[in-house]
Amino acid sequence: MKIFTLSAALGLALATSAQAETVSYQEQEKLHDIAAAVSADRIEHDITKLVSFGTRHTLSETESDTRGIGAARRWIKAEFDKISAACGGCLEVYFQSRVISGESRIPNPTEVVSVIAVQRGSVDPDRYVIMSGDIDSRVSDVMDATSDAPGANDNASGVAGTLEAARVLSQYEFAGSIVYAALAGEEQGLFGGKIMAEQAQADGWRIKAVLNNDMIGNIEGVNGVINNSTARIFAEGTRMDETEADARRRRFTGGEVDSPSRNVARYIDWMADRYIPNLDTMVIYRLDRFGRGGHHRPFNDLGYPGVRIMETNENYNRQHQDLRVEDGIAYGDTLDGVDFDYAAKLTALNAVSLASMAWAPSPPAGVSIAGAVQPSTTLSWEPAEAEEQELIGGYRIYWRHTDAPNWEFSRDVGLVNSYTLENIVIDNYFFGVASVSKDGFESPVVYPGPAGAFGE
Image (cartoon, rainbow, N blue to C red; front, side, top):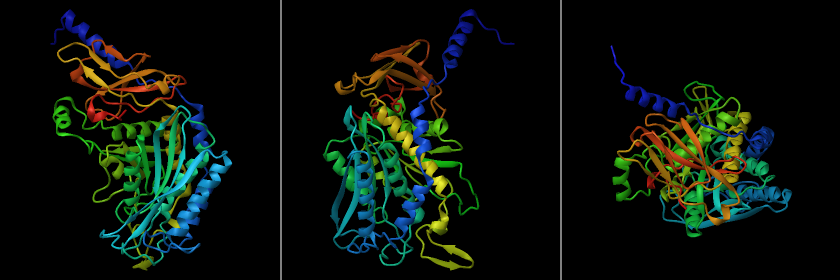
């Protein structure tokens, strides 16, 4: 028989009371409107057009108006220009390029050209969230630049989703900036992402999230599973730019599962739960699939938060394959392997996530935590930058058990820069802080210390 003393019972009651708080959230009707505005028909049109260029291989034809990557990128830019014209010039559209040579997959000098469209924020235009897809396609031989490589799912679906998100979101004005990127050279070594990430760093972009969309249209897996109700979000753990001192600190304070990329992934997962019907996202605790890569990686390499959003069930018969039929199996990445309604669903997920982050204040900077050998936990953070003072309404502290994948408890603490959670012991939970706008849009959660920092 267990005997509880009065003090033990009081402690249990306090702990139970603290855990009884659940995550609070303010529903946003505008995000429902954005999700509903995404069109599967427009996405189908754009994927079909991209497939019509025959091949979009990085080393393919650039002079033709109907075939090759040159024609494809010019068409993409023209589409962004149309979107900008429809919103009164709200997008800054441009080519971004660099000549690459001496690489195993780009041995001769080749201009790698991406298409970028920037929708400037009205309050904090130097803060960015990015959605990307990659332009290029390939067949079995990665150096074959002449054979037909439709690339319907890999990755016309991601580019079409990016164009559609721009069409929908360009009808709104945001506090922060949103970037729509059709990146080149992915199959030849992630060069478009490298070029963009390095240029962003040189230009001082404060990037808070990169949502890389690579294959968002297939619902029939090579394993025989057909499923249009799930998606994956790949997110790295320990950040690439961690220093030795940061690693020593993380050993004692945690943060392996709370990199900014992981908390962006949790944020997107919540957006799916709240705004996208019949969609359950899986946050995958890896940078990418085994032996594979995507255009979020170059941003991660420079310390920026970035994730890969994609289908759950891949069909390897439709990836990187020559068009052929063998033993009754059709190989190749063709239009009949794309579910346009599913691609629209994942595009809507991107759109509401981008909009929510761009309407929200910047994630808190300089988040720190204290409470060793104390009955309470104190979190502190820096005041918002001057340009965001008119936007921010307060802060929300989150915590969860250390073996829980998602935030379990939250408390709104007002417009302060330090708060103590009484009788919630620092050793028993993971903690974080989000910024909240006056109309209820919140940033991703920031884990204390360098392991979870989103930057200034």
